[in-house]
Amino acid sequence: GFNGSRVAVSLHALELGASQFTVGVIIALYSLCPMLFSIAIGRICDRVPPRLPMIVGSVMTDAGFLLPALVPQVPALCLAGLLLGLGHQVFNIPLEAFLQARSDVHVRGVILAGSNFISFSFILVSAQAFYFLKEYAGMSASGVFLVAGLGTIPVIIYIFRLLPDATIRFLIWLATHTVYKVRIRGRDDLPETGGALLVANHVSWVDGVLLL
Image 1 (cartoon, one colour):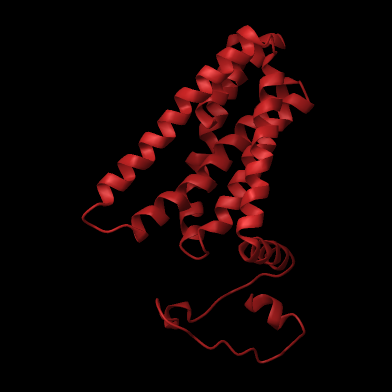
Image 2: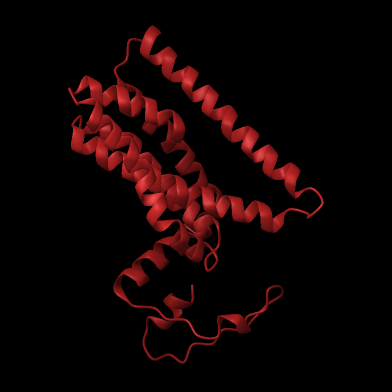
């Protein structure tokens, strides 16, 4: 998991001959992107369905796991720390917002507590799995990263298969917002519940794609 990867990153850096100061810098990079981009991520999550940023966060996390295994160098560990820190926020912020928005006010605390229980349980499991792979399986820290990255891929594939519409919408959103500077006016006029009719004025053939 995200928190367990910090231990693997530290040991991997020491295996590569990094100093204790360098290890501290790499661990600090985990917090850099959340510190800089958490508010921006929250604003994006308020504008798009939660599934889209969660898919992005999953892909970024997987890339952060695979990078140290594929490129066993200290700069790769620095980039992995940035990716894992940012990917964790991109996944976790919409998840927390979704749980709070969809839960009943009378049991919201219980639901959030259950979510934290599951998260910290997986932290404990990942720490034990790391110890087993390191001590009993004889794997290096980069090997542990490879196992973690490969283990995340089926989860991403499952999300894509479970939510094909959301995946296609995300890919279209990513492509259109990369090419065009999209500005939305009158978003507050859309109803929170029920249907709405969106009609394109057909300025170009891209209108229908942007509506997706």
